[in-house]
Each structure stands twice: as structure tokens, then as C-alpha cells.
Length: 280
Image (cartoon, rainbow, N blue to C red; front, side, top):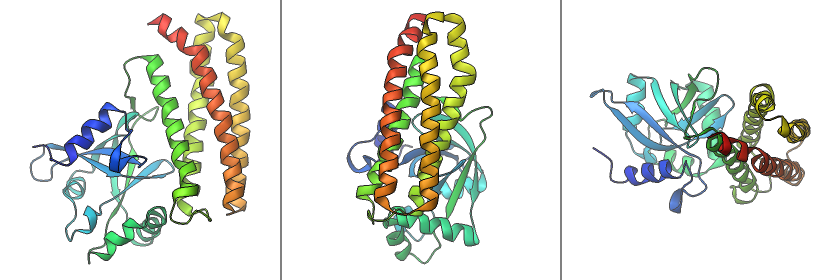
């Protein structure tokens, strides 16, 4: 039976590919589908997450309740889960973290949002931190789109959205004058995803377009050069993150990357989307 609170959130999430309004506007949110520990039936729950390299982290806070949430009991019994990010849908393996790793990552979550600490203070139970490892082969999962052109736009919009979240953390985070560990990881996770996307375009998509649409070669040449420039900006951001915690310095690097990437995505859509539309 649908949960009276969760179902409208799930419906809005799916209708808007993860973009939320109201209370959840600007939040990192995903849909987690688990298998019922007792019933064996699927249950979908909206949960907040933190990016962490090749995995994502979810926290079983239950708003500070003295009981673990049902979805946590479900994934302990059945560790294979389904994740919907708003862009991709994929199967994942859930791993309950323990000891020092759990404590370190929970502290990072608190740095990102002090509300997690408030929840922990309300209960004697140790709030679990769960890592979700993608099981998708050969890519991040199934893109939630009905055409190739739409898929490209959806992925681009996901990069735009993630950059907007990273930028917002400089000014709306709990301590905007310093750069917390969560911001470092978020930036580097984003950069790795961007690298993977551009590599896929350079090695698969662009050669295919070259073969079918030779007139697009000048645009593809420019896009490849922009990939190189963006990679340079990413590396400069990595070096800055490794060498300083000064928010102003890091903000400048993020803004440079943002400007270059937004211009690149706009140009790519302007040049390539008509080809996808013409091809059906």
C-alpha cells in the first residue's frame, strides 16, 4: 500500500527526473526500492544520499526514531536494491558500514547537514550508514529517456544540476567560510562522472556521428577540443582541492569550470540535437 507521505514525493521525483519542489527543493534525493524482509514485495522509498566516488551513501536516520526504518531491515535481508537517480535506474548492492568507516562517513554527513547529528541525538541507536554499489555493467545504468537525443539532454541536465548543488554549498552550507570534506568528495565525484561521459562521447558517440553526418565534423572537432580544456580545468580543480581549504580560491576554480561546461553543453545541444531529431 502506498505511503501517504512518500507517494507524492515519488510521483513528483519520477515526473521531473529527480527535480523536486517545496521541502525537497535542491536536495540530493533518490528513490530506493528494496525487497520486503517479511513479504518479499518491492517497496520504494525516497531517501537522501551523499556521493562517494563510485558508490553512494544513504543514512537510515528515520528522523531520529528509536527504530531503524523498514527499508533498512529490507536491505539487510535482501542486499540487492534498485536505485533511481532521476537520470539512471540501476541495480545496486547494499553494504552496511561499520566501525571507523561508518563513524567517519557519518561525520562527513553531519558536516554537510547538521540535521543528521540532531537525529542521532534523539536516539540511543547508532544510525546506520549504507553504501550502495552499482551492479550495472558497461555504464551507470539505464537512462530514463525515450530517445537518444532526450538521453543526452537528460545527462547534460544532471551535470548542470549537480554543479548547481556544489556551488550552493559554498554559500548555504553550515560553514560557508570553509570547504568541508563532503564538498571535496562531491566535486571529485562529479569530475569523474564528467570524465567518463566525455570519454564515451569521444570513443563511441562522435565516431558514429562522423560516419553518418560528415558535415558535423567541424562541430565535433570543436567539442573534442573543449573536452580537453574541461579536463584541464578539472585537473586544476583537483589540485586546488588537494592544496587548499580556502573557499574563495576553490569557488573561483568551480566557477571557471562551470562557465566552460555550461557553454560546452549548450553548444553540443545546439549542434547535435537536430541530428538526433532528424534521425528519429
